[in-house]
Image (cartoon, rainbow, N blue to C red; front, side):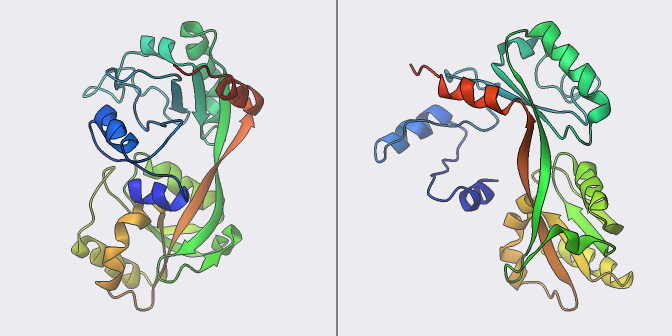
Length: 248
């Protein structure tokens, strides 16, 4: 994820480490920064924040309502009260849950604005040479898919909506570290089914850079789907809230 962010955020430093506050202090000894954006930090209680933005995946917003390990929640639903902005993601795929998600949020938090967004595919990028293809390149193509993200099935749905015919899929746990034999196995399966196009995510592509030279990709093209976030509703409220921040 850090490598992916470094590529996407040109000129912006990405600081990695579990000790967030100490890492920021160390950074400020050598460089200047006006704002730190903390990724995945809603439960990082020891660090004071000026703004808490909570993302909610509308395809599976609250699971079975149970905490880990019985469910997917890291905190009880009552913790929605702390958020100052809600970003609802994948609202096009999870549209059937949208009204219920909003109702749940508003019952616990009446003041925070609710922003609706979608994951919008932008282009395909080749891992071998950086070759770029428009997303309509997938129309009618038979593809193999693999990834190690939290919700691989929404990724597969996105490819299908773009016209791809998914004939082979392999999914790993989130944050999985790929071994050469795993990728070779995926390639062999694609070749056995006469699939010559393999698609993965941008996050997974960052993990595969070292393996690209170790593995034979002969007769097989591999691309990652570059995806952006598009705000459908609430963009003005989002930027108004951010621009009116009063820093400590």
